[in-house]
Length: 315
Image (cartoon, helix red, strand yellow):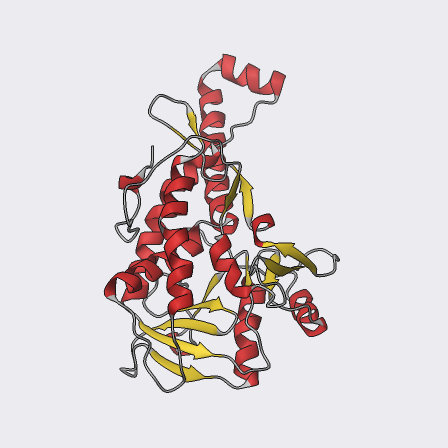
């Protein structure tokens, strides 16, 4: 069973973690507090965002941050007694990372041609948030679950070749092996650790978009890019040559890039073209849903352009 000790040391707490077993059904893979950084400013609560869908013809809808980027009992696991534990990981995230990160992001004062001031603790928390944002989403976990299902099915088929009663059961009842959904939780945390370590080894650059461009986020809120200078290689987000990009809020982005200029934590002003490129990368990486602070026809067209693309990872 995964608990507070099973999570990264980058998850810090301001006090003891209290796990209340209240069957929290709606468990988010993109934190609500993070999504508030992309909320429509017309609504003072900061809880309303515009939801766009890549794969369906639905028009943009104004929705609550609570209503998106979640799945039922998403962090459920099996405890040492073999019983289903729905709340432990959800509560750990809610009381630590998902609570701290939005505050850190909103506290960042990024002005072009200056350096962003972040404590070592905040840098570590943000790095782990970036790593976990790659792996806690369905585009990662579903792939891990499917891989384990295929392995289990293959083992069942091999067993059937040696045990006639298993073969008879497969033929009569059409039994299929299926991995338990929580099989992907440990890989989720382990891969997040590796990616966060890679982030910490890179140069952090902050970018302020043009005033006419509001940055967007998605159900895959962090994406990566391999510079052409790295050559024709296969690389994931933990590779030293990869750039990691995250729109932190509608007016600020962070790029973790291989060290090259000595400009760590520098802030740069973007023009319209490069501001829109950040949104293009986000739209391409999204699995289906994009979240924005505005309803724009141009954004709808951009999103539909990449309806058949998305980011998926297998570690």
